[in-house]
Length: 257
Image (tube, rainbow, N blue to C red; front, side, top):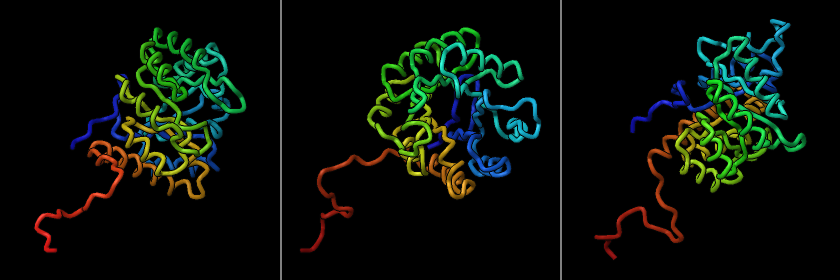
């Protein structure tokens, strides 16, 4: 089956893996991991960019000829902070789209859906392509879609936890009910987690820690690339139904007894 591109608003990509920039040991490893991942989108926390020091400015270490930067509002705890951060990204010349993240609890880093929705409505009106990060709440995801989100990003597990997809049933229902792309974001710890997300029918996977803090980040980045591709192929191929009892692989008709 010929699979189409990942389309988010006016943006189109061949890769369905979105990768982050935080927690790498150094910029050289980050750049090599990005290349190995095959990702065409890299997300950057705008509030953590050092605009005053070119060497420390992470934007200077991203190959902008190969990757599109997706600004994110990590570190924001109110709608006002997130809106201001998105506007800053636009002012410094980054693409007018945003991974909208508003955290509600400092310990668990779980999203504040009420504040995120408030910010989403404002930014959509201002012409931003908005990708809100949320928990695996079926109702919340529909509200974000109704507010004009170009894609919705439910978490697989808490940020950086590496626990994988904790609630596949909710993710599956969110995907089945959505009319916009669903990108599973957060909690992916290894390649099989990414594959499961894609096999459920997700349009893409966003990850960072699972690669950046792996023992060998570059090798893990390659594994994630293959995992996303494999999971997508498996979803499109259509898995066999699960059965309670065994079913012979070879036909029994004509067998001499």
